[in-house]
Length: 321
Image (cartoon, rainbow, N blue to C red; front, side, top):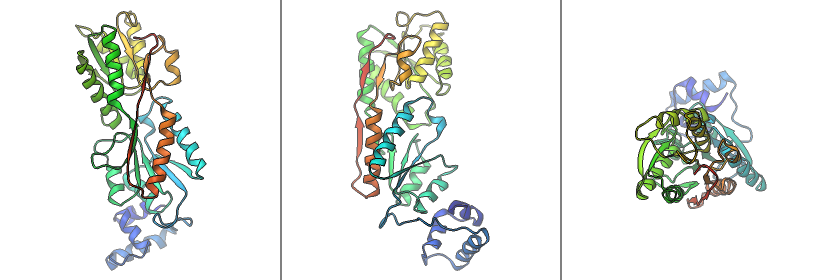
């Protein structure tokens, strides 16, 4: 039983239940009694270790993310580095995949965590909006929010320029984009950055293909893209998993990599070096980003001035370009 369950049971918001639990007086008497009755009937007890975010600490940080939003080892390296840095500061790491924005809010209002890192940020993102409305310390694993705040991510403009310039140097002229669902902010940001950089480098963006985030999705997207006339002579994927799948699709069509079509990924996950054709990709300093995210969570919990940190990348030239 959580504060969110009490809210659902009584038909009120999580914040209103929190007001009653903390003794706020600006709650209608009838509503207050209904909430208190529900608490008594269900046997709900607030977290016995709850501590005020403003005065004491839970000594725990939460990460909210959808597992389906990540289909490779990229996020695992990020979480490992983040957890290591937090442990150095004697902070616990809580992984949550909430059913709703209200569930995530209840985690904060019950004082179970001091700050929350939101991954797979969407545009717009109900979770971020709700947490900010209730003054919960939030860090985004994504591009900085238009209204400011804490954020950590890659400098996508710099990364995309590396890819576009390398393709131009190798004589490629038509690039197809292999992306995932643009409901995820990081996918949308990468696609936009790649499209802008490719055009700035003088390449034609032949189109964008997407059926998901898995290697199988990359294979399907590549086979569809490479059936077009004229055919793209390069495929740029927003993740290494998609790029590896794209390689499989190209090879199944009897095409040579990179002679007939180049393939570029993003992330430099361990399996990139063992792709059917060793994958040229963008190396992301994911461990450094994880440690930086931990530092930002600590700063957010202390109510330090917000800041965003964008990391530069490196192009890893293997055999697919």
